Image (cartoon, rainbow, N blue to C red; front, side, top):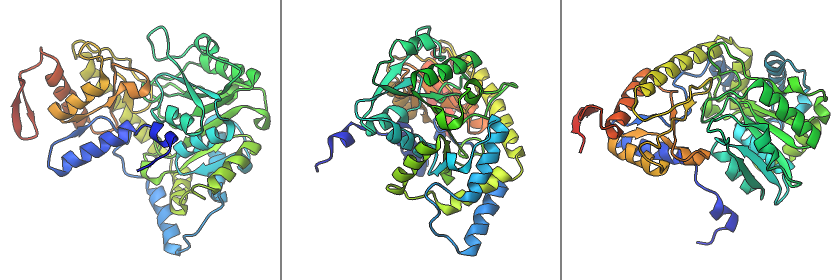
Length: 403
């Protein structure tokens, strides 16, 4: 079979591959614990369910405008005003099939072949592949001080005349780190001054802990939206736990939204009207669901940290948001793919290799599941790796000895 050179260069999503492997093992009756997926266990908000059901009940399930339902856009306008303290027009918004499509549309709109897009390690696994899919060149910036927090001076060193965009994801997947006010202010000013697009992946923007708030990029520009270089992406997948509905949106200058709409019209046409109705229900319904999910994830984070702190040889940065942490497992292996595979086969625990995020020797662990999964999952990992742990363990109904 002959496939294109570009298609051959695009890597498989490691998270989706591991999800599939875990699904197959579970079908076989294996007691797999999934610490890899960024998907909370909550049920979709009732307002979202009622919104989608009402649309289904009418039987009027047809095309929508390519850039999204006007009523959903109105709800997003209110969301942006409430959470970002910025007034935007419906013409500044495009609704897509998930935040992932918004980011891809933004890259397709702004990046020419051989243009460079700066990615800040650790980065979400899809960023480099999406850049390559629009024939751009991903340029990775890794903090030199060993932290997960970027520095502007490191970014400035790699900027060239080909630099077209920088992607910032804070709170960060996979580390859970929130970038500082100082850094967000610096990077916004830098991009506005240099004419570089700043794509802000804010999908975890309200999922933060310990009374913290994620800095708002709009606060640090004096330009109006039409002349700004900011593209802000968000959606309902994470903060409402509505991953399966696949609704995200981007807020950008109108001219960019027009082009992104053209691109979307030639690919997916429009996001599902049923999913858009659900998203509208979530945005306009009772918002206590956000706080309930946030508190659950904060408690899960605390449990995960308690378990990992007692793990010999592991170093971990305490997450300030998201569903994830990114412990350093180099005391046990420098090959995160091999280590992740070993833990799945030996302990039936799904993790995600850090190399996929630009952090070799680390594993991304998700605490989006239950407290029971977290404690049992870390117990299994310790049993498999730490020689100081008990020699025997129960995995499901089976008693297993470490060999």
